[in-house]
Image (cartoon, rainbow over all chains, first blue to last red; front, side, top):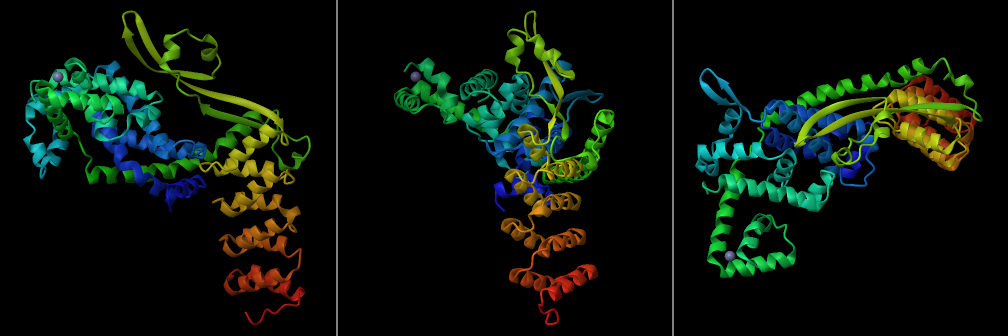
Length: 189
Length: 306
Ligand SMILES: [Zn+2]
């Protein structure tokens, strides 16, 4: 079954079609949530909530945009909400203070993946910390646009659609994000 | 193009998001300007560092997510099935949904639609504040607050609206809502009730199409039986007969197959004989086999050879 067929089958209540549909996109959804929120638990929460919403609302999908766009509208809204809540609670970074000094909850995740990838091993520890800091300083929208453009490779026009804004507004967000990053990382590269 | 302008455009250039003309002008400048060439190289290096900072989910993480989702989905349906029960409880004082009272003409349908309104756009909150749009919803909840600048704050409110619509079942807009509800994949209870209301309107071509669709595709046998009920006066309509024939040979529910046979054998035809003979080859329900044999006898067709 191709994607429209899967969607129609899932709309008729076919559970297996729904699962297949999920699998077309869920790896990228998890990747986006993980990079935006930098917490495996929060990324899992976003994943669950996003696909539950898709499941409950799939009957309202009318094929007037791509399913990818429709799905990412839900995902990015959830991520932005989560990022904004964190800002309110002033819990932006994942660094927690313990008796042994500062521990980063993401370290285990990143180190587990670093093996076998020379590029990642070359990346200095200091630079990693700095990148994480500057990402944390971006506004939620700048952050989302940057992740979607840089890591997910989406075009600004599509990103605008997904975030409910114009291509121009998305471009401005990306521009501000890269300016901030250049200012913060300029000495390193 | 000045160096300063080139520098601001470098990231968009690397993302391939510049206009054709800007890209052209930038490339020409970079070719001739060593300082900007150097800036471009540094930008590329920064991009590479950023590439390496990406976190990729592990296969275990993904598997955990998928397992949890499957478990959660299993619980979504029952939660929704009680939807109509709640509504009926709430409005039983004014309305009765008993099928006997649902006469085709002048019957009244009542729908309660709950939907989450689109989140208020930040723009509308920052601009003039529409008091009416906030007063109207049944419930609104402040989702988060965020200071924007000196003395200004951005508040995002989630609104859940319930709108009560009442009208005759043959009213166009009521019918459209019922047709949508009849296909709601997440709520079999809602589909049963909607089809039950719609089945009294089979003279509408759109309703008949929806009934035929439900008979063929609805995952819930209760919904399929209701839809069949609505089609009983169309046993001689060729399109209906064609769909019912397929249902007879494919449907896994004996109750549905029984009702389809009852509908189809009202009209004898050669086509019917071969369908029944085909069914005899694979039918394992004794009652249906018996009905089938009886019908074939009545049509003077052979049973034994199958
Ligand atoms: Zn220059």
